Image (cartoon, rainbow, N blue to C red; front, side, top):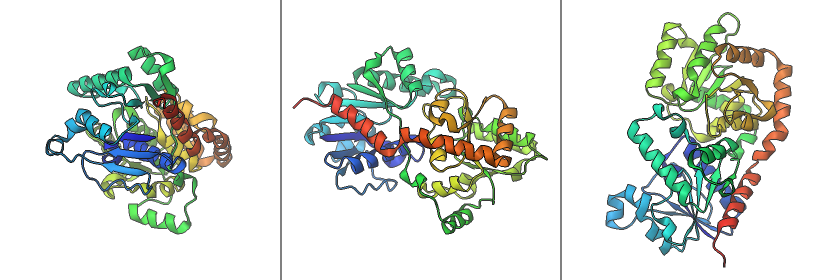
Length: 380
């Protein structure tokens, strides 16, 4: 098959959607090199360098396409898809080119979450309108929808009234590097590179209200005098981050919380496995997620994880996670204390996570996505 991808986020996004795109493309090229994978990228970037001969980057070449790159990506790219003989096009982040259903090219769209539908107050009104239009259009015209969790599948059914048979859940995987143990030399180098303390809790994710960093900081405040382990935060933010910092200043917690993305800058993807493995526990106490990849990264790193008992997070965390009510800083604090002081509990959780994460193994993930492609491809 000639398979095309909307690769904007693979090349330009350093957070969840970019990570998802790069991981999927690399895994498909690794496990199914007999196909050709065309990555439609609106402009050059140095963030992604796939090394498989089956992967081909395509950028706009016509004058107007280069001048109006957004229009090329959202609509005009169709002529390039037809020129390259694309059999199937996969929109990796909630959207498909306008009018693609008229080309005869088969389509799959990946839906990560419907957060603009659930929490419109967390976005600008114009952005909510754009997201809703794109999401609804993609779900309506796609030949098949790939949902990344049962939670997301149910939301698509509930909000857009899409028949369940048009949606398949494909649990994503993580970079295989998370399953490899970092050497002591690698850990020491990364500790120096990012100014990491000897022991720490870890938070990975954009600092936005939904991801609930403030309640984690409140938990740290509750632990004063009982536990002296700082929190390392990897992720950037805006207004909500300033709200969190205000709380930190008011409670004199500055020495307890290290914002690595500010003190040390961009964290390279290859450094994350060691960063996880050196942590006491990873905290991911979101109010709502479409998936929650850091929970899975922690499991593969054999690090205990504290996560929320809501949304899709029990789906991802399985029996090996420590669950809390995200609204309760007291429960978060108790989880942090227990995982820092009860080695038997930590080992029990790590052992329980072992069988569970096999559902998310790279080869299982790649096979589930390829099964969708085989299902929707044009008959010979």
